Image (cartoon, rainbow, N blue to C red):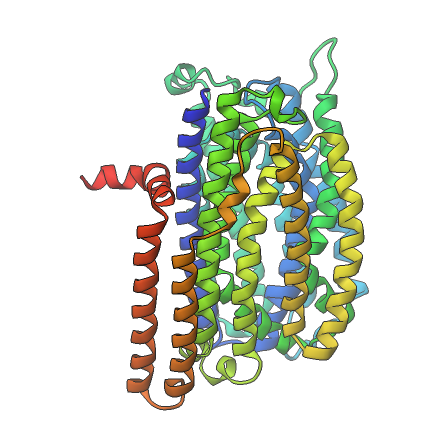
Length: 539
């Protein structure tokens, strides 16, 4: 597949994934606002921190390394061996579910049954849901490698909507069920997700469309583990790469979910404070989740397909190098400007947003400071996602192994900093520690990118330098909106709030106009790669 075709399909995948994440986060956003009025903060804290951490840890440790390894390189490979390798995620998931389930049941603090009933059932259900989701992993990788955009959108949309409908229904009818509500909803979510992939591939394989696309798998039976005579069960090159990524993913999970591990294992916050932290965290991560994560996942596939892992820039096709460098530069500029916008305007509108969303329970206390710090953290997330996506797509096995040692040291430092900052600053300390963590990871990735392109004429890191006029617009907007918050927000009535909101809207409009006038290359990239499909539909 030509590099330009890969870019087009990758951009469509990122756009569709972003829309999917919008749906997921909007529904979660509304669901949290709804459940706040029916359930206790403690129950929400146990579900969204303790049990979700169990599920995400099992799934991440069981499949992340396999995804990285099996999506590297071309889609043309021995898919029988790749599918065999991917099925190993299931026994690995069972192993982690048993080990971590026992830890969650017997070593961690058990919530008060009168406040959070049915904790043991919740642990079992969330661990089981991780195993069920892993049953669809070979199908997910096949779909992602061949850029099946519509399948991913439909499957995840249906599963999220089903989960939300069941949760709302049970919360209204049976609020006394406690964790049974979220356990059933979680099991329904993963079951619908896996069944969508199964049904699609059962209908797709052997069809004229599959034959036309020369799809490498022709029968449903080929999706199951199988032995090939006189050949190894798996591709050992992929297996070794998977092991390298596994060591790295173990550390990355600690860094990604570090604050939840500290909350869970060190009891630095009670379950009620954990609930408030998680709600603010979800609100602050809306844009990070539905824009940055789809871009990172989709363009990891793009860079892995266009450039060959482990080769220097001189040994690659120069046309592909030029395209990759140009795309990386524009992606960095795109996420940087989104991050700056969130940081600048998030500072002045955090208290207002929390007051509208959850009332005084969120807007008083540490809630506004949490969201302000998270607005800064979004900027770090934005840059780190793209730089690491390129770095991990190009690193050879030896470089991945070396990076694992860096991650090990960083994991230890991060956990120590999280613990001490939390004792000094409360839950805000978690976000400050995350900013430090992301800053170190950005420094490593940018150093790798600079070193990779030093023997070429390309400088993709220039995407991290916005125009002076745009920086001035951001600075003025930050000053004006901060003053507006002091004068008009948030206990001076709805008219004052309206003035504060209007001030922010005018500053944002001025910033966007400046952006369109000064960043014309970026605007063309977004229009041609991300918006072209939707613009064509509208004409």
